[in-house]
Image (cartoon, rainbow, N blue to C red):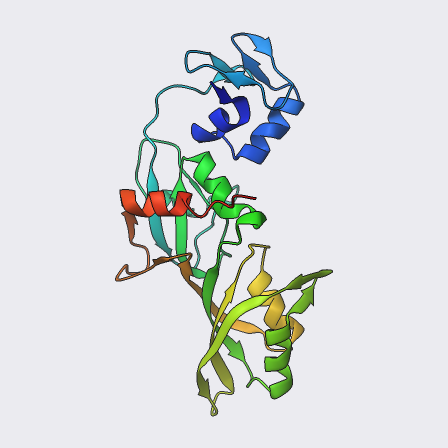
Length: 240
């Protein structure tokens, strides 16, 4: 017997938090009966439907690491018919990106149909580190560096940078290449950090999520995650 929201997440239909919303909204049925109580446990034989759609059919779990190109939407579909990250990975199963990268941002992105793992990677409590390489306008001052070290308040919340390193400076073009690691995934957060310092981001690439790197993947290429990598990602779940 497993908790209903965990079972829903395990089938890749939604993250555990989203599954809880669906349950509370009365959109989930177990063996034909609406279940609204969180924590309800179900057997492996139970028939689970969401909005009358059966979800617990046997589907192979898939895990991919993609080097996202610029000009591709981090979504499963796009109303403007632009290319999405899902289009880059041909598979008959429904997969979706974990988190997002902006349209013009490149780099490491995980795609899966495992809602439980997606929830682990996105939940703030787990403090998953994400590392970026940013080309910014201008040269950082001592005051800028001090602010980065101490953390900046963005949209009313403080952002802590666990690590940053100036990789190079171009004095002729007045740009700086900087590596920065944060532990959250708010939209446009890296761009907002440097915008608050009056150093707009010119180019941005995510190079690392936790222990995963791009290795030798070229832009637009992808590879399946290894079993040991998947297990290691699951081990990142906080015990709190």
